[in-house]
Image (tube, rainbow, N blue to C red; front, side, top):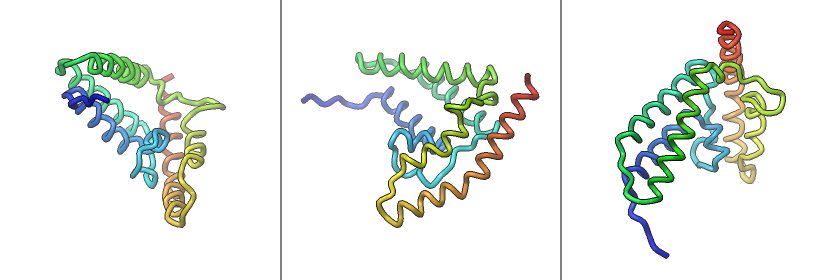
Length: 152
């Protein structure tokens, strides 16, 4: 097996993943990233704006990065595609109109709990910590929906 020296593109991707996990702990749990399960994603308009700014800032960093191999080329293409789409959705107001009976932030608040470990007392304490933050998350989600209504 050959090993690959991490590149500047890899560093950008790693930094982005860490920053996004902190801003969107629910997604971090879904992705299996440890250390964020006790936190809650800010579903308010301000939380969406903060994540959109992270996407924009990362896209700017990617624009300055030169690929050193095919892995970097794929990473750049994939990140530009996904982050660009995320920014477009934010700018179109879709994040404040995310109401769906099957999959939306509201369902995610419940569904993510099924992904969290439950083997130990500490695991359950972590779940309780996250659950205590649900009311604030719901208030943020409602604020986002209200903003979406105001914006048509």
